[in-house]
Length: 377
Image 1 (cartoon, helix red, strand yellow):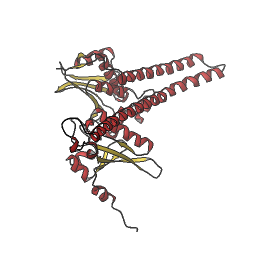
Image 2: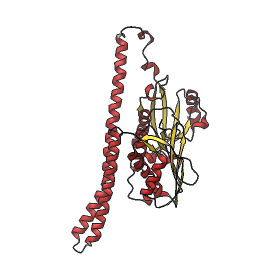
Image 3: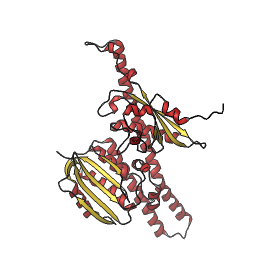
Image 4: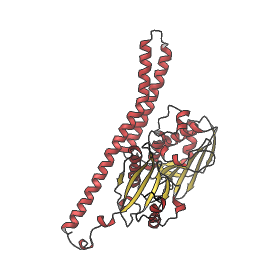
């Protein structure tokens, strides 16, 4: 009794692969079993985002990454453990092993989540058919039952994700619409209770809140279309020309620097790419101190579009969170209280719809948003 416990040594000695994450899904530590499983060095993993531009869990499909991200967000929000029943098909290319992730919160004395422990469980043996069942001709009854169970498990998992996604979407919409509605009601109540109220000032305030509501509803409709409708027909879009045309049509308030390589062409909806670009420009304008830089280049097999501002930048632990719906940095809230928190999630969804990605990369003295899309062939 009273002996000092070496928790780090115990963590390292665990036979199952484990990692410790921050609430922002950045790796704090991994044990030896994890390094043996992945063949990585500890220096390659610690300090990096689990999912993101250069994810620690590389090779996960988009649906697999969404499962892991959603589970970790549930743990951080509820302070309760959660399990991700990852199957081999969640990896690209499919791997030889099946893994289940158990995510458990580490709480401080006040009950707040400070870290998340992730334990990898190898469930390959329980999911693969027995060798005896792998025979030519009709499957044996136990193999048929096992196959049906796996198919049913996948359907239930997909249904659960769909319901959860719809619930989050409704919550996000209600939360974001509440503030301007409250503003409208407050202004109307004050005007009705004060016979000498300045009606012109009240109308200006009401108009501002109505515009805010219109912007939010427009963003919600855009997200709904991105999540539920197939992408519109793809055009051949020259990214350099797109940037020039959009800057001419909607010049930013800051000075502009461009480095645009010609003939960098992608297949996508020009309207949607213009929306993506305008969202990035609006974000850059919110944080810049005076200059925004636009870069277009080919990096086969990808086309690359970068929007760089000279503002304070984005800390590594925030670089994934800013793409979550309604998430806004404290600085963004102080600079623009009317921002919706939907612009960057919409931009990333557009990138994903055309086989690309949008992420924040390292840059000295500012934020650097990088869009990658497959080059048109």
